[in-house]
Image (cartoon, rainbow, N blue to C red; front, side):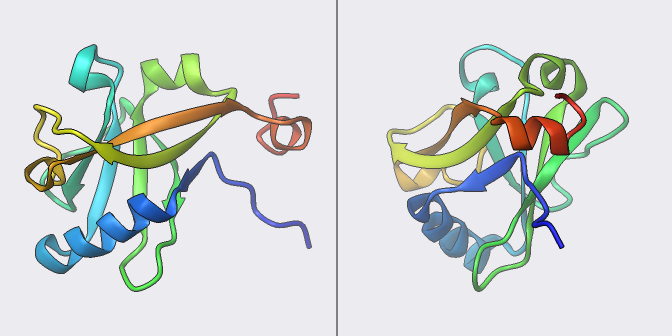
Length: 127
């Protein structure tokens, strides 16, 4: 059986922050919008604090040891531009000005991207 491919991943630093945030806020989710400035950063919210709808695409689920799975969404219009990429959520120093729950920690999440490889393109029906 082939391993299920994912469009999203998380770095160890970001996973550690997610564990810390989940201890305070409970289950978490991400939304990657197509805005400018902070609107183009991945925003982390407690589940239920941000409503996703028909204009959003579920990119995948982050499996982080010790917490509930973290679903990652993107606006459908942005997904049209990013559908050929794999996204990794990372954590860096600095404070974003959005409503993402890591902002008071003096850190912010950001997206690192790479193009999907041939096997991933085929798995997602893009090859």
